Image (cartoon, rainbow, N blue to C red; front, side):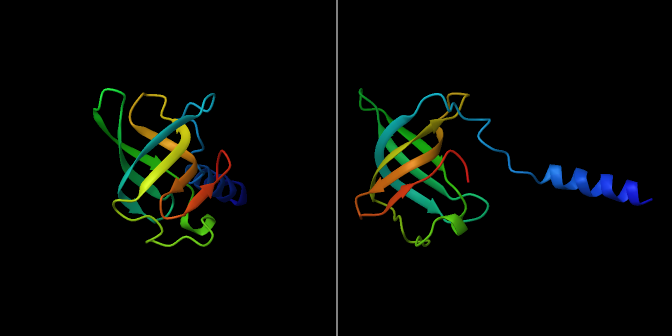
Length: 119
């Protein structure tokens, strides 16, 4: 019985394990500059929505994933506001969508984040 309970608890722990960076191309860093549309200061990961123009002037709507609010020391829900200009570096989603894991962010309001590859 104890062995069965241990196996069930271990399986539950694996199910809740962190997903890591498997969905992102960590072999190269991309840089984007854009305007914040929204900032979600929520667990388990904060999300920055921003718009960026390419060389031809086409606007792309990006989502950038970051670490949890608990790891963004000194940040609040208002650290990034709609309209802030941001310079963002990170790893793009392997599927080519406009989604990235943010490793560095600098905002026109002075907010700066530098993080590791993961949490």
